[in-house]
Picture 1 (cartoon, rainbow, N blue to C red):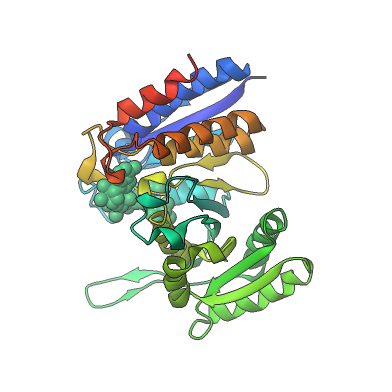
Picture 2 (cartoon, helix red, strand yellow):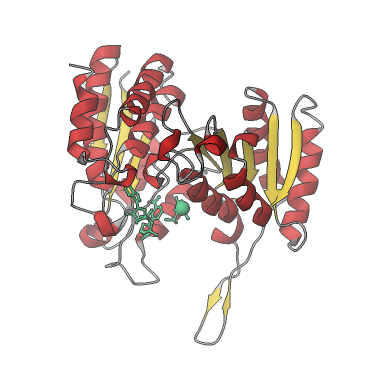
Length: 347
Ligand code: NAD
Ligand code: IPM
Ligand code: MN
């Protein structure tokens, strides 16, 4: 059976970074001899323009029936209606598919530490993964309220939600350096107290894994001063959103970071962690590596093509090492130049 892949280009630089990635996928499928069906669907601001809503029924239905979903990015300054925003489509998609676990790796590969805005000796060897809870917390908590004089967001977590993300993080840590950092704001938030207590309970099932707790403000500092001390970090939805953008700058650019999101069963979604970058859209200068590395995660995790995934990752790391990069990494290459460089390897 051919794999069924859904592509969601979205807005801004989304279509620019996804189209070349899909051309690469075609070449990779020939080399590694697998078949797939691919269809693109309206999503985000593009779907608001074409169908009036950011997550149309046909898009959601296709995603539910897919083996994997590749997403560019959504959002932009032209979609300002607070009740019909592109981002609401992304949150609804994550929720509808139950994608509670979001894996966001950050790596400083050999010979690329000079791209970091942080001193090379501090970042060399960084290899960490943020496990971000993705379907609860402030993003989804009820009640919510907004009027001219007051606003309310609710931060809720249930024990079950914390347990299931904790297990994902512990399993990951078990297969890596057996070191888990749980990040919360336990000195202030009730949800964080339950978070820390639950992490400690789950840790009893993983005696080989060393657990540390860090408060989120201190963690944001340690990420910059000693990034190599981290292996797996587990945290709630909003902290994970913020810390992962911060972590992405350690190797040099937000444009480098991929992600994979999954439920306990069902299709996984792969997307770079950055947004639609309206300030550089349609200029052919967006860094496509975060999207390409997301495809590598897809090849590995959804289709079990470890060799194809690691080959693609090595090609990306080599281009960075050679200084063949877009302007965000001080290079002169356009987005299409980068794709041409990558595609050469499969001709
Ligand atoms: P952003 O991530 O789009 O951009 C932040 C900065 O990083 C910008 O200066 C941008 O040019 C740069 N940047 C981001 N990706 C890049 C890349 N691949 N190559 C080179 N430079 C890159 O964040 P923002 O500007 O705060 O948000 C813009 C829109 O994107 C908003 O509507 C936001 O809600 C949305 N957003 C969407 C997603 C998503 O679809 N998953 C993620 C984050 C933000
Ligand atoms: C991300 C984005 C989204 C988030 C937005 C666009 C809703 O910032 O994927 O990191 O906050 O989860
Ligand atoms: Mn984000």
